[in-house]
Image (cartoon, rainbow, N blue to C red; front, side, top):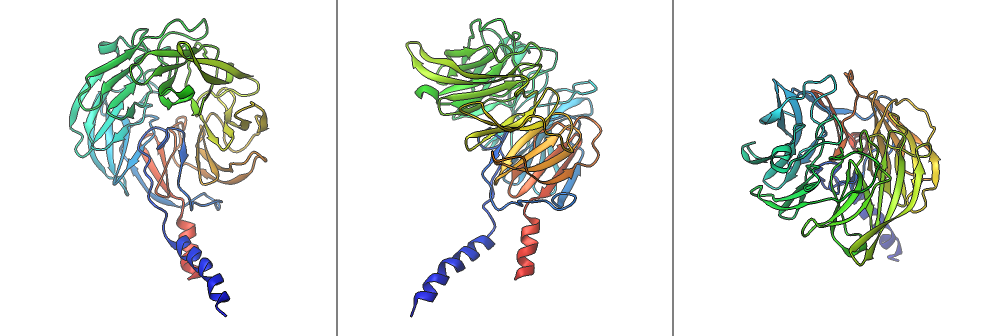
Length: 435
């Protein structure tokens, strides 16, 4: 007799849960919560109608540059060049009203200048690196400067080529880790509260490929081979240094080019995946225990004709890497991580042109192209499938800033402006209409 009510109850619960808003998720630093361009959010639009998702709001006045945004609590943080200086901007969430600005250093006076790094938010503090290597720690509430260091002056830092510092610093526990790029201070850890040096990592000669100095990547954490370490792509290639004391563990030179090593590596277990442009390629290295601590061995190397990522990066979803292939191009490609086998892509043309910055959320890939087109793609190794597109307004310079996804919103930095798109609005409207 009561079989029907018991069967109906789960369906009713599922309906009620589906109607509830998803928990808010922050995007506190470069490439999101885990520095991998993957958002844990669900309940987002699986397809976009003509024109893309609806615009929730827009703001302007944040200066020029290619920095992405960090989104935490009721604030949004970014970097921009304005009025002759380079500044951290704190904006209200939602709405984008400017709450405070804090000077980092001089503006980068160049046709494609402006900051590239993204502020890192950690509790009551915000950390940012300017293009001249100025590192600042600020109060998140007020923008008041707490401490500052200089990568070139304090640590002898240098870049591998003429483009300037683009790094987003990493907070790990009570430390802040960043990359001056000097031979005896390639990576440095400081006390995040005071800026006091904890250790500096000296890097030996890695090989002939590439150039000395820091690259344009940002540090990620690995526990490969059972050792906690910081992995970074330098001018001479990939390195791993022990997190506890900065001791050099391993290096991999083949992936380096002499012009610009840019994209942040992917780590999974004992593996590190990296790719660079300028006709270099992509590689997977495996980390294993050794007498000296950790050794890196090449599992495979993909020729530049198969997969090279100039900038824009790539994401790991399941067992596959998705990104833009080609130097200065963003041809969508899907590669199996463990084998390097191309599942699809590499020569697919679409509305987008130029390099593509890539992010992932809720079964979908977000490809932001240099010409200002954002494509929504299904994240599946079964084939290339578009699910919508969006044209960013007012694109004049290369549209390079990486996307951020937080609390059902897509944040799109376009030079002096920030656009916020609602990735759940259509679902909410449909739910109301159904009710």
